[in-house]
Length: 510
Image (cartoon, rainbow, N blue to C red; front, side, top):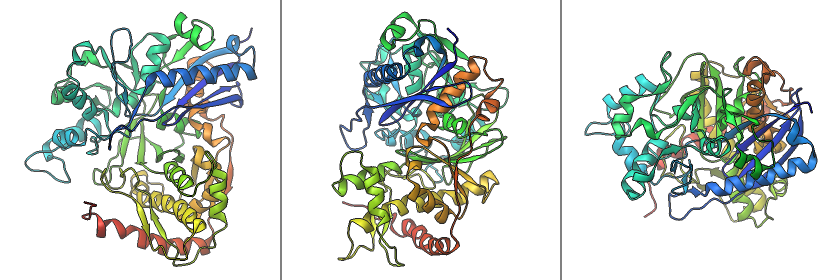
């Protein structure tokens, strides 16, 4: 049978999305399965890797129901996943501790210790910061959300496990090991650990940075291009998934790099805004650029050539989910939440929402900042609250975009909108008005990362010469133009929004 399909997976914070792509880049079938997020203590965020595997089995079964001969037709498999996690495993790949995912901030004090010193600027000791900037083009967050501080926290606080630790893996790389038996990561995921030498001609684990935390290189996986083959599906994995043993599995990429490919035209420098649980702005740039003051920086791109400029914000779809619960709408009723917001007729005095429900990363790295409303009145009702939540996230993106535009060198360029939040067309128009630029909602935006993972697999399978030619298969989407009157209104709203944090950042709840 002709192998005319590629299979892509995208493991997010709340669910895995899977899709089968045809040679023309069209999605032949797709499926989704959620899994739990565990918050055992304030600042802790864990997941059970076994839940990812079970969800993976379910979505493959759903795809095979849709296309019964799919298992024999899959030419290659690609994986994408949330980044910044740490999963310690033994030599057999068995999990030794629940995954500390990107949301986890228990190691914030460790992060400040690693980066700081007696003399510090914005929390960083100048010589330490200079070393990270020289080697990596960036620096770890002080929030504790990056792998480097999580690794140290595990070593200190789970010392009984440490002698059994064989590898420390990110989410995608754990799943790769379960599929192929190989411990390998991609350039972008390695870079985000801040233990990676990103300089041209190096692109490897940094002996200098490993010494900073006293970590043995042997505890980290190999590094390879996203389009390289990690291996074939093992007999165990093939049996569990219902797929053909030996099916090639590409190294894949983290969610940011996969979304850039799935959004199309990464080589041409297309800008994209991802709206999922969190949000990020990203663009391909030829040279590393960074602004330590805002937390905007670069990761090595999936193919190891060039960089992705990224501005990550912690709160996007999570705010809409919180608002849905607040208003008592049914589980998953995001269309109802959108409809509630649509019914509101905004005025100059509408309440303002600050979406920092899980702290913030860009343009301020502050895990302790919290969200809230300003300007609520006795007349405020569900419609105003729903509208303000949508608006608050859009204004927060504009807050980051001021610095992002300067670093990318592409102000006012059309912005491609991807992720599950891009299905909300009311929000898409609001983003066009708030940002004052054209917004292009890509086809099947919620499967953008999945599509990117599948296109990586398509290159690994030999269907395309490189990722740029694979991404060229992505069709144009629906375009939303900014309304001049609305944009002028949001200019005034943003001036008030941007003044909120500096006035209240010293205030904390007791």
